[in-house]
Structures are given as structure tokens and as C-alpha cells.
Image 1: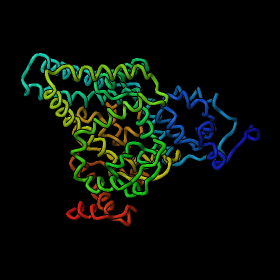
Image 2 (image 1 turned 60 degrees about the vertical axis):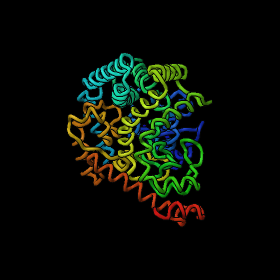
Image 3 (image 1 turned 30 degrees about the vertical axis):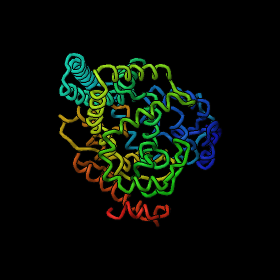
Amino acid sequence: MECDKKYITIQQLEQHNKPGDLWVSINGKVCNVSDWSKYHPGGETPLLNLAGKDVTDAFTAYHPATAWQYLNKFFTGYRLKDYKVSEVSKDYRNLIHEFTKAGMFENKGHTAVFTLTSVAAMFGFVFYGVLCCNSLWVHLCSAMVLGMAWIQSAYIGHDSGHYIVMSGHGWNKLVQLITGNCLTGISIAWWKWTHNAHHIACNSLDCDPDLQHIPVFAVSSWLFNSVTSSFYGRKLEFDYMARILISYQHWTFYPIMCVARVNLYIQTLLLLFSKRKVQDRTLNIMGIIVFWTCLVSWLPNWSHRVMFVLTSFVVTSIQHVQFCLNHFSATVYVSPPNGNDWFEKQTNGTLDISCSPWMDWFFGGLQFQLEHHLFPRLPRCHLRQVAPLVKDLCNKHNLPYKSLSFWEANELTIRTLKMAAMEARDVNNSGVSKNFLWEAVTIHG
């Protein structure tokens, strides 16, 4: 009976937002996930970011219908008082329901098979060029092909990380370790840790690790206040060196993208050899060993190895640029995400790259960035099909639907970086004192 139900207010729910005391509301039912957070497949960070809030939309986006049956064991007995669903959320949930009825989340198409086949063919070419030829030019051509293979392997690793490549979790995990750790040298454990936080807190300057690149890049002058990263648990210091680097970031963006992969390797090693709890740590380390053993042992001398690796890095910079285009010029905010504006946060924080269907393979489906953020479990073969529906929903609720060509997105990103760079040079905005060295460096800025 209704009179037997117990209720708490949203203000009371918000008090349960700390490690060891994590409550969330799903469809108005309040769940205690404090103990479960240690075993949550998506990691503890998403739960910490959304603790004390209604998370129905985020839960629906990330979990299949079979997950709902397990919620009762977390139910506190309380319901959220005055629980209401916005018109945007109603339409969003209806879309998910329609996609589920159509079997789109289970129908994975042939994209993964095609991509895995192309990756295998590219690696076969690389093996032949490196092992059977002594010519430097053949080695450099092989390096370019390897760069493309790394790009496509990363897309498969990304898809398997969202469990949308194979039907079973075990097979998906195998694909993750092979395409991530063994073929690209990037730990799937590191990827899950950062990527899940990025999805949940899309474009939050203090919660989204994909925007926390101080001292090298800053997409907003808000970062000049040395915000504290809730993800890394430390202050992102905007110091004198950061000010110098960021003041020229619109010039250094593309050169840094050419070696951005080095940062991913460093982040991988820092995580795997840290004291932080890492799922499948041993398997991740073994995969990384396979990668580095193969990378440095194929070529005859170190000059060839250095040129080979740098050439591969330059090719993969295309992918690093693409990931930046999807978010750097989009709307940012400072604060943890709110669970009740899930759809709005995703539309504001993402940008699609428009292209012809034959380019879908090249971009890995992630040119439909908004569609992927709204439906992370949806296989990429369906993203182009659902894009018009998402656009209509955005228009209905007066929300932005940003889709630009690759060239236009690059222009917008550079303008965003330049705007922040110019603000970084202003001592009144940065709070970092000027000196003669600074004036000498920036006099021709």
C-alpha cells in the first residue's frame, strides 16, 4: 500500500555521496551501492560521480534489461519523494525501448568481423615487410600500415570494452586484451578506468579525465584556477610552465598529437604498477610485455626502430586528433554530473564528425560521438541509422546537435585552443605573475 512506502527527499539522498556511503536512485527507488562499488564492472569512479543522485538514464544507457532484476538486493526500502521524469528523459527512454524491441543491441552486424580481418591483413603486411625485407623504405611503409592497424585495433578494443563485439563477456575480454594490450600496448584496464569516467562526466572539467591535460592543453580558462581533479585526486596546477605551454597550444596541438601515444603508454605503466586495485592486472602486464617485445625486436638496428616507431605514431595521430575534435570545442562545466540531465549533458558535451558512409570504417563509428554517448551499448553498425532519430529528438527539445566536417571540426578546435591560449597570456585571468622571461617569450605571440 502507498501509505506503507517510505520516502526520502533529494536533499537527503545527496548526503549519501561518499566512499562507503553511496546511495543512488533508479526509477525513484533508492539503492545502497556502497559495498557493490568495489565489484562494479565499470569501476568505482562512475558510482562516486553519480552518488546521491537519480541515475536512471545513465543506468539504462549502460545496462541491459537483464540487469534490472538484480536491483532489489540493493534496495534500501526508501523511494525518492516527488520523483518526476522530464519530457526529454521520457523520449530518450522510449528510444532505448524501441531499439531493444528491434534487437539492435544484440544485432552486432559484420563490422567487427570486417575490422578484425582488415587488422589481421595489415599486421600480416607489417610482418612481411619487417621480417622479409631489409629496405628502410619498406620498413617505413610497413610502419604506416602498422599505424593504421593500431587505429583499427583501438576501435575494436573500444567496442569490446563496451561489450558490443562478442556475445559473451569472456570473449569480449579476450578481444580487449588482444587488441588493446597485445596489439597496441595500451592497457584495457587503464582504458576502462578513464573511459567510463569520461562517459559519465562528459566534459566536466574537474571529473572528466579526457579534458584534464594541464600543463599541455586547456580548453577553458576555468582550468586557470587550478581546479581539483576528482578523478586523479589532485589539483591541476596552472603554474608558470603551464601558462607558457598553453599560451602556444594552438601551434603545438598537431605536433603533440604526433607523439600523444607516448602519454598513453606512460599512463598504462603508471596504473599497472600502482597500488590501485586493477582488474586482471597480471593479464594486462603480460599483454604489454608481448607488445613491447615484438615492437623492439623485429628491426635490425635502433635507427630503423626509432624511425619505424615515429612514423607509426604520426599515422596514429589522426585518431588522437579525432578524439579531441569530438569534445575539445564542445560545452564544458565544472561540477560532478547530475543524473537527471543525462541527455542534455551528452548533447552539450559532444560533437559529431559528418562523413560519407564509406568512411565509417576509417572513423570507427565514433564520428557519431553523440549517438555513441547516448547509447554506449549500441553496436557501431547501427549508429548511422539512429542518428536522424537523435537529431529529431534534439530539435524537439531545443538541444544542440552539432555535426561538422572533419575540416570544420579541426578549425573549431584550433579556435577553441587559441581562445584559451590568448586568455592564458592575460595575467589578470591566470593569476600567474609576469616577469621579463615571460614577456620575451610572448612578445611576438
